[in-house]
Structure formats: structure tokens, C-alpha cells
Length: 403
Image (cartoon, rainbow, N blue to C red; front, side, top):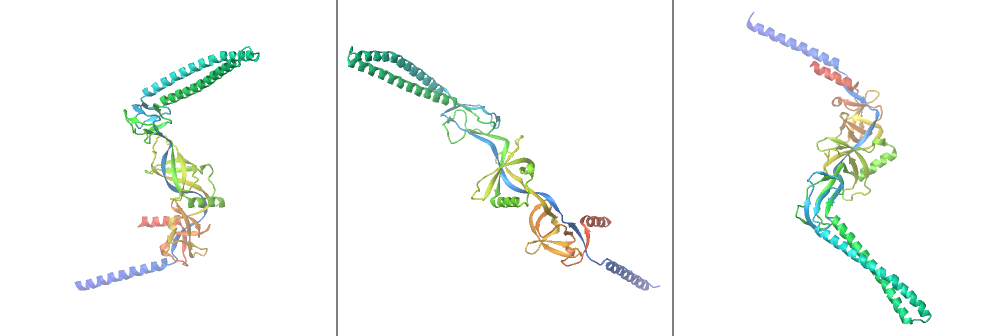
């Protein structure tokens, strides 16, 4: 047999094999034809804790700006910057010498005034006795009326002197108290326990009473405040949902707040108060949260996120996000399978995302079979073959292993 005949026979064989394989594939395709397969989940109401995430900043629980209450020269600075101090700890010492001198002078003036008062009081009894005696003698004309009048005037003058000396004593006593208070202000102490910051005054600096610049600032950091802003509109909507019964309060956990730091670590806090005034520039209400801060990781002025609990929705419809798409206008839609295995399109209203699910408020009902896989192979009104989402996933995985 010639080589050309052999080539022809080989070519015919290849063509025959190709036709055979093509026929097998066509037969297999015909055998596999039928409704497309989709995976569904059954929508069921469940209890869901609804939260909202709000931005906020930290602020110190207590703040004391240390300012002098008397004029003077800084003689000593006792604290270390950035250290912890207790209430009553000495921070600065103003030169007390001028105030000690003023105190001693006021004390001496008080002693002198008290001595003068005592002398004035000592003269009154004898003058009163003389006036009474002359009064009796004048009534019987034993002495002249002028003598009685002179004695009475001397008594009144002595009594007036006593009152003046009493007033002088009170004035001197007040001056002494003022001098004592000024002297007590020369040691500048911390009014609260906390951490003291950087000093704004050095030894030898001249300071004045109640100056605008603080010498230092002491802040209590444990616990610490977190102030977050919530829009007044959202606050009204939340109140309406609670009053209508769509949301229920979460008991003792209602005021628990999760604080997320900038490095995504979290700490727990407690919601203490809502401000009563809406900020007219931002339209928000401030929520104040108290957070334990024993290790003082949180510092004043840090940016954080607060996850605040709104309440519990006992009949929440949560559906997987992969089962929700959007049309050309951006409206959320979903495909469900009816009782006769027909695809039906639903227009949805979504409230928020919770994890990897959407909270649906309108468009789906309990018991609906939501299509989550196979959406690209279907259209509304088409017949489908339904399998549970887990079964579909297992079959897909099996197919991939096979490949």
C-alpha cells in the first residue's frame, strides 16, 4: 500500500473519531438540558441587635488648669512633667517671704487693736458709775446740771470709742485672714488626682494672680470620656422606632458601647448622657460615654469610633448580601422562587448592613426562597430547579475537586 493511501485512511479515521465525539457531546448536552439550577435560602425572621457607628473624640474625665492666685516669683517646681500626682500634692512654690511679712504685720496690727479695745472697755464702767451718781445728785440739786451733762457726754464718748475699737479689731482680723489666705496660696497644689502635663513656667519666672496662661494642666484619665456626635434626625428616627415597638431596648446592655481605637483594638464603655441641645452648625447631639482606662491607653483628643446599641429587632429579616443586586437606577432587587419554582423579581427597601447580610424592611416576607447562587443563568418568569445553598456549594466544590 502506498504512503498516499495510508495518509488518506488515517485522515478518514480522524474525521470519523471527531464526528463520533461530537455526537456524544451533543447527546450529553441534550440529556443535560432542562431548568437551570439555583441555590436558595429561606428567609426567616430572627432577633438582631441593631447598632450604629459614630465618630468621636476622647476628653479627660477631670481637668484642672493650674494658675497662681497671688503674684510672685516661682521659687521651686516640685513635680516631674508627665508624672502622676495626687490631690493636694505640691506643684509649684511661690516665694512666700513678702506674704509672711504681710501676715506678721497684720497679726501685730490685730494685737494692737485688741489692746486698744480692752483699754477703751476698761474706762466705760467707771464713767457709767459716775454718770449714775451725778444723775441722783442733780435730781436733789446737790450738783449742777452741767456736771451731770459732762459725765453723760464722757460716758457716751467712751462707749463710742469702744464701738470704734471693735470695728478696728474686725478690720484687723479680716486683714489678718486675707494675709493668711495669700500666704497659703504661695504653695500651688494640685486640686485633683491625675497626670500632670508639660510645665509652662520655670524657676525664677514672675507670675501674676489668675493669669490667662496656666502653669500646668492636670488631667484625670481613668476613667475617660468619649464624646460622639449623633445627628438629630437619626435620634428622632430611633425614638420613633422604639415608641412604635419596632425596636426593643436591650435591658442592661442597652447602654453598653464598644469603642474602636485607631489601631482597631476595642474597649468597652457605658453611655452616660445625651446632651439636651442640638449644635446649630452641625445638627448633631453629643453623646457622652465613660470608658475605663486603667492602663491610660486612651489620651485626651484621640479620634475613636463608638458602636452604640440602638435596640433589638425581634423580627428582623436578614438576607445574604450576595442575594441582593441593583438595577440600572440603583434600586435594590432580589430574585425569589415561587411555589411553582418560577423566578419572581422583588424590589427591596434596605435599612442597613449587619455583618455580611442586609436588613430588609420591605419587599420580602418570612418563608420566601431567596436565590443566592445562579443569578446569572435566570430571568424573571423562568422555571428553575432549586437546591439549598449548602448543597449547591458542596456540589460546586465536588466539581472543582473533580476538575
